[in-house]
Each structure stands twice: as structure tokens, then as C-alpha cells.
Length: 175
Picture (cartoon, rainbow, N blue to C red):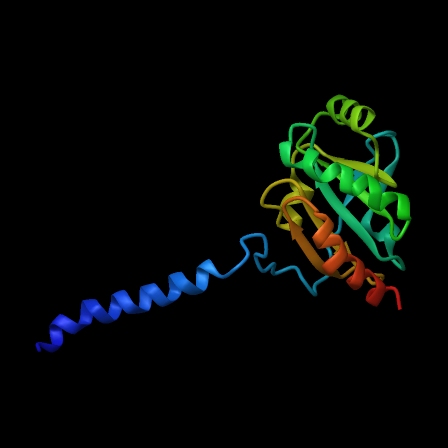
């Protein structure tokens, strides 16, 4: 058999292997370059009190969850009841980042569906989200006492993600 004829077959075999590996991966687990690094510095107005500012530095010494959401986000409605139940546990502070939204719409959304957040901040132009590497809402970031990002949830927070990843990691970080 001609060696040149085997080249396309070899390339095809390599592509099949890469495809098979790719199909076994969870698309919600995109490695983030921010894991293990300090959370981006930010200061933003509070949604409910725009004259007051909030900074990530305000949370130093605490393990906390930053959850990006928006009134226009359909998937945010999916995770919202789960966040409402989690907030009742008072396990850690949950800060909402109202992403690329109008304050009035965000406030209406929280009034309609409930407010699981210890506080919400606004990110009208999306700069804070961009600094955190947000691909799209919802996304959540678990941040440790030193301000280091320890986990990123892409897409809605699910009961499984809370039970299997977030809560065990929170317990570890709170030690």
C-alpha cells in the first residue's frame, strides 16, 4: 500500500480521537484562567441604593458568591429558585451583579421573583463582567477570604452544583 494514502487515514484517526475526547467533557466546565487568581478589583453602585458603593474589598475575610444575573436572562429564572433556597441557609453572603441591565428592570425582577442576594450591584456597561471573564449570564464565582476566585459556575447554579461542588468547597474554604 502506498504510504501517501495512509496520511489522510492517520489524520482522520487523530480527529476521531479528539472528537471522542471532546464529547466526554461537560460544556459547562470551561477552564477559567481566573481560578486561583485574585478577583478583579471593582467598585459599583448598589442596585437598591445607587448612592452607595460596594467593592470586592468589602468582602475580604469572607467566603462569598458573586452571581451575575439580569432581568432579561431566561436562564437566570431557572437558577433563581435554587438561589432563593440557598440564601435561606445563610451559608455565605451572595452578591448579585445585575449585568447589562436597567436598574428599574432589575428592581422589578427582584420584586417579582424574590431577592436571594445580601446585596446587588449594577454593571450597566458590562465592564465588571468582562473583567471577570463572563461569557454570558448567569455565571457565578466563589471567592475565598483572601479575594481569590476558587470556583466558576458557568450557566445556572443547579442543585447538583451546590451539593457536589459549591457547598463542599465553601466548607473547605471556611476552615
